[in-house]
Image 1: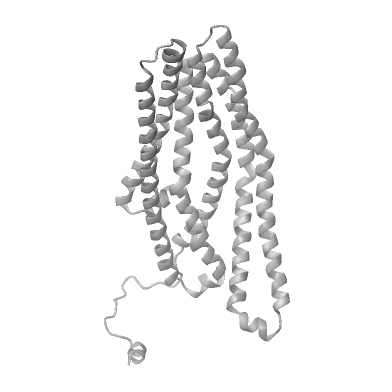
Image 2 (image 1 turned 90 degrees about the horizontal axis):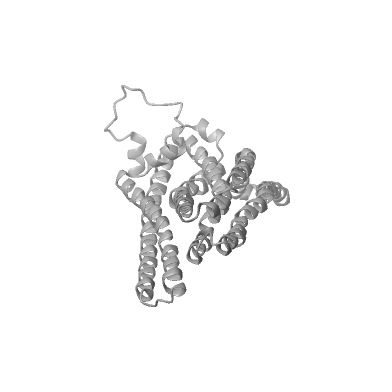
Length: 341
């Protein structure tokens, strides 16, 4: 939460309400997903089963209006979130660049140029990615799962309970996965920084490398760092792939429960055809948040790792500072005047 609070402070205050409005729209549009399945149930029970065509046109028009309204709100949400995230990115890079201008030589001896470039480019972009994508996807998933669960329990608690019972297993898998994921993302980030730093050093010292005919030696050193970065990415992907099949199995189990157990309840008059239609249409609102959970964990770990790197520069202070009683001179220095003339 400290990283989010810090990033929120970087954003201009006038964009705060825009971002909050975007997240509210995200929650509202997630709730709107429940409307059309309810109308489909009415269409099934009141029109098709009852063989009454009178409500047909009204139901179809209402479903069309809901769909168009939701898509329009989603477009507005993306615009608001992009504006606020781009403002944060601009402010963040300006603050970091200004901070670098006043650092002393010791700071640049410790932090290599390639590492600083990575922090000001890729790491800050992940901070923007959190505000533009990760937060609203998290809101979508939570609201979608909770609202759908409550609604399905109100329709038929037996089938809803059977579908939700797989959630504890998913929580266990998620906890096991996230235990070592952050360490792996930190290692991957360090490998990327090392590779970028080596590339920058070789570009800056290109003439020296050519003068001593060290091209092949430097090429091998860069290849070594590039392979290390590749291996770090592969390790993360291998860990994710070891958990992904279990998440997919649990997510797809909901569809199987809907078909088999829902069909059994319908045969035994435990639910109507319209109610079963609601479950078949809303089963994805329970399974998609589960599928998104793994991606959100990956993105969250990347955000935490990158934002910590950026915060290190933000909170760093030079060891050599002006005295508290120093007076700013209004006289142009002699060497500056000589340059001007």
